[in-house]
Amino acid sequence: MGVSQSSPSDPGASESETSIDPAEPIRQVRAILLHLGLPAELVLDIMELAEYYAIVKAERTDGVTLRADQHTHMDHCSALLYLVTPPLPDCKEGESAKKVVWVIEGHDQGWGGQHPGTFHGAYSWYEACIFRSRPGETDSDSAADAEFLDTHNLYRKPEDVREEIHWDLVPNGDSFVWRVQGNRVAAREFEQHVIEWRAGEQMDAAEAEEHGHGTGVGFVEALRPGDRVGLWMRAMYGGWRNTIAGATVFLMYDVR
Image (tube, rainbow, N blue to C red; front, top):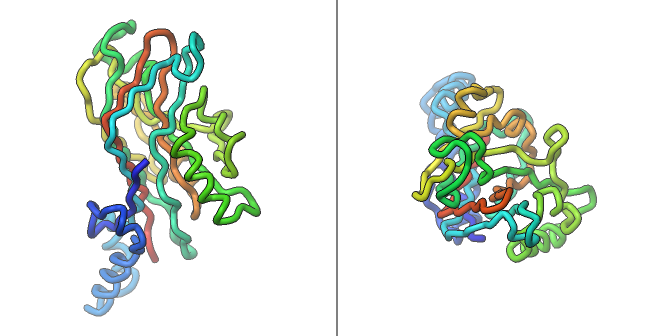
């Protein structure tokens, strides 16, 4: 899985540039505004209104197809971990995650389903999880987990990965995932979806359902320093497939 981490001033940064602190451009702009004599409270308000946040970005651009029976023949329930972000950096008091943006391009098997052309009854979809270090986990444990998931990414359900790694999955009620997006039913062409989840804001449920989006309730608020976000491909029931061309995840957080 190829991932990259970049700042808002350089959204196309390559993997070799991942050592750059995503928060540094934010601090530089804030220092310039303060140097102009603006009050600190006004500077923070300006940057908040402009949504000038630090960004942890993960991107993967190779195509993958997941069959519903890929994990176990004749079982018709499969999950493939397509992408894992770098960890969210440590934050100072008052700093927190503000927004997550998903850009996903994919389609289903191109036939079948009861509601072709819509997102209703889509059994080809995408889910997100939050990986969190367990108490006592070392840097070597975390590195081993990341390396393991590069090659061991196929499970029946996302929660099954908990038995294989040192990381925990953050619960979402009775589940460990959040639905991100469904593929349009019986669509043969790739379609790009852009989904935004914001802290403190709730997406209209009816509108989200109409466009196949997940509402993401509680996801951004659940993020903590050190967390990584995973994007899963899902397919369920006989004949269903999920084909992805690529995906990008932006984790945005404020800097004080």
